[in-house]
Image (cartoon, rainbow, N blue to C red; front, side):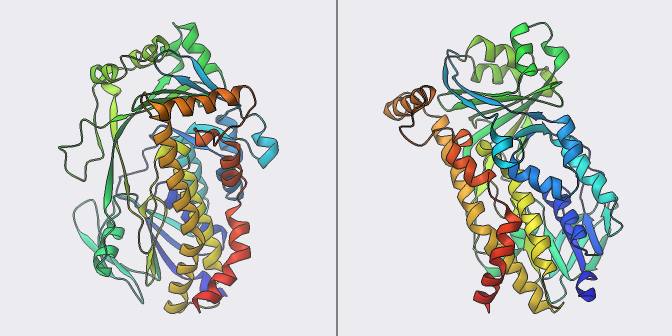
Length: 444
């Protein structure tokens, strides 16, 4: 077993997936973990992030939960409102989530979460970070995978390891090369949607008691409209109000396929939501002109495989999802924790064994991530409905829920009790422990 823990790992990317994977490997006893990141440092920027119980449970096991919990805001209610009128379509009490699942549903600042994970990684002597290091290509997939990494000065270096774990996101270089090597396709798919991500500090809302009440609360508010959506909630100990909008994409259609972000226009943003209620418009009017950025929402079709020889994909590199369930980071973290556990169960260090156990990881994770990606897509479709019969039926289900009646699946999947049970009640490590041997036997 000592030989297993001496394996050399290269992790590509230091986002949520990369940091969680490094920490998962370290806490499972692996001693040689190198993380390659193209940025000069982590930067600690970003917007709000949802921390559901399935994610909190893993953060606790990784040793970072208490610091995050101290700053994050626990959501105790959710309000779904008609964007044009501010009329409340449905109200969901989420205050029982902590007692039901052992952890609350919280929301926090992505920078705080990344910082906590990074600082915890720095406590592990087995983890090393290599910034300003961009992977340019995979030179060998096995039996000893080799990658070419370009440093800040444009000089290329070759690195040979035992395992490569690609946590490099939806624009993954490793994924693209893997599919090309295997001569298969899984195209990036445009959703036709884009998002503004906005954070308003408390001082910007002081002038408006109605808006200040939002940042002081524990409620996630969704204003829904025809093809448009505003989701908002307080973060950072109620000192920041986080806003995410969804709207039709009008800026990326002519951009190169690699473009995912662009400088946004406040004037254009206000125009897109000009028929929304005064309260929602006042929130958007508070945004500074130079802080409006727009993100293109893209996914890609299901991959035929996540692994090839001794290289595997993790997180958004293999299963990006739309934001409507708030599970993107959580699923990356589940991947990471399952990977650390599965690889720690290897009986030897042969390339064949490594490849087989990476395939066990994929088999454990594929069905769940695929299902959640589908649910996120469906949730968005339901909330973005325009006038017509489908919207009328949706709103009848919302109205019935306010009277305590369930007449169909709750349209906002994020707030549906049955969906929450499936997502929040799932313990990926317990699942892996009980299933990995059967999957291994099937592969044999």
